[in-house]
Length: 232
Length: 171
Image (tube, rainbow over all chains, first blue to last red; front, top):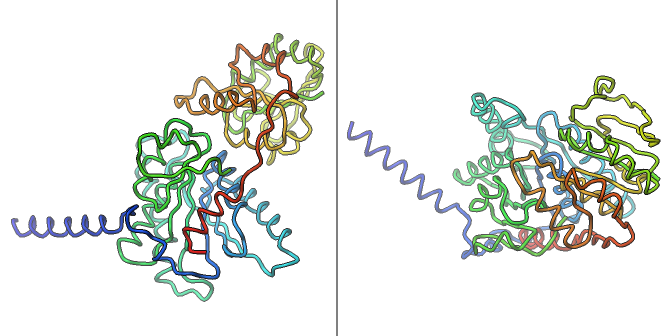
């Protein structure tokens, strides 16, 4: 019995030490860990409604020649977000047609952690299904299945809320924990949040590489994060 | 002139009821809004039995011609046609409408537990970009709104996010 306790304590402290190591810290600059590159792959979660509007506004701001593959992650049944992503991509293609060759994007559908009106009783089960799907796409498929196209999940993941985006971040942490390639995670708090962070904002604030808010009052607690004004 | 009312994907029965009430319709008519389009979303209303998803119904009340339906894949066309938008305080709708330079009255849903929509409505109305109103203030808000005196909402400054991302990714 005592051996098991000692063993478990050891495992748990090693895991805690590993977690501490991989948590983002504002004192060690990360820029060195990302060497100069010519292009990279971007993934963005479209959380439906206003979250989708904001996330797509952020993607519209980037240079598609640098972020040459864009993966849109949508929740199951959210056809509207998928449609809007396609519309943005066709406008990008139109804009670049003359100067640039093929553009690439993909849409990934993941199960919802919790549907609206879903009973709280079944929420843990559906969250686990959602987490496994995210882990499959973020950890297992890019690292274990050999693909001819591009390796890895994405170099950067952009999150804007709500709930399900936390599960994506957990999947990214499994990669970090195991020392596998993991995307840089940037969280942009919703434009609608002026004086208090959203639940996903509160959860993700210590976990993401960049935590960006759009109203300065949200940083009045002197906590982690930055504000350069409205981004959407 | 055309007024467009939208609740997005939410259920906002009290806004729909209020818009169909005599004080609001009279206020609209007085300002010259003889046409009204109502996007009901998931709201329940007395007229709802006749709107199956995808159908459009029409009715005339207090001399205002009213068209109503539940959803369309994109509201962009309605926003563009409208002279006045009356909306729930969803941030996506607010951004879309303000970027088109349209006059908008925003009515936060009082039944939501979270007050952040109200805060957004107030913050943007304090800056003069839109008019915020409660359900009971709606007739007065319609009577008072002066589209020409609203501040022009700034376009998206794309360089801000591009800079954060490029910096992070080492470009």
